Image (cartoon, helix red, strand yellow):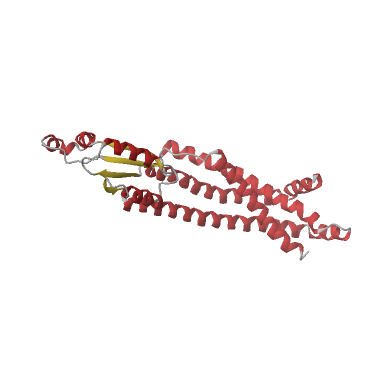
Length: 285
């Protein structure tokens, strides 16, 4: 193991310019991916903020007894998707309308009777704010005999779902594209290292060295390049975040796990690039 590590580190000394170029290219590939990741993180937070406003309102028939409503609240809050269920009386609904609909305040004050029905406002737990779960809860609410109507903004809930799906799909495609580019870059540098040491590898084979023994330093070398590239990419992404946060808009940075994932991703694609290149070119040496 010590010999493998030493050989991998010596490779950086033998070809410092090539190694630096490789690490830099990987870093910038992952940096672009990191910038996209920052956009994705902040977009996800924005969508989550919108999703938290998803609310189902069950309008009640006039004259529904308060005991029935109280029991229904408890039953609804027992739904696995539901975070809270709050009863809004007719008087509370009218007071809210007068407070929030300023342009109709005079008209609402002149009403002789309250036209607004009582309702139960249902908020969903995180993870259940998609169209499928919202529809399922709304259907269950319609099953209560004292519920006159159920509203939840079906169109914009479905649009929110489509935005989530689009963000996930774009993230997957962009991530895969940059991963392929990084693997190709690492593979090229490892291939050059294998060819540069082809005579040395041939001698090692003559004295009985196995392909696994020969391959290990190259694999470690690729993993180290990917690791260094990932660390540099996280540093560059943080610098970009600081500039964006200071001069453009308030933004969020990766949490510790997400930053670690970028470094780990760099390490994995470095290892993959080495594995693909070494396996193919050792057969030719």
